[in-house]
Length: 138
Image (cartoon, rainbow, N blue to C red; front, side):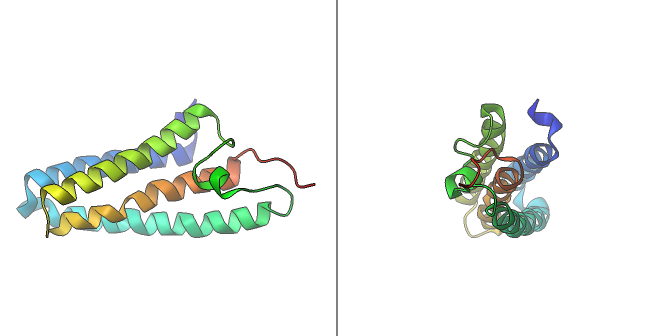
């Protein structure tokens, strides 16, 4: 069910690629650190774009629906459980892997990994703003 949604597929795919590259770069930092930094910056930039689009979509939708920040970013009461698990699970994995690899190789390019969770939270917010179930404005 959840894998049919393009936002969820992108979130899971981005997370998977990040995990593979970050772990590989932690194991072999000399050969993969540059690849990891580039990927981290690409995912961070995509997350920033998702945040901007989310804010615009939420602003437009707030004219007719009672929008909440928890409903947009954390999908609280606005998304089915499988969607919430997939999007926030991907975000959680990004946080854990980013911290673990940055701690494993401090003072290297792997520190850029801490920017990646912006990608996961941005896509969760985008899903919430576009597809979340909010009550109508009174």
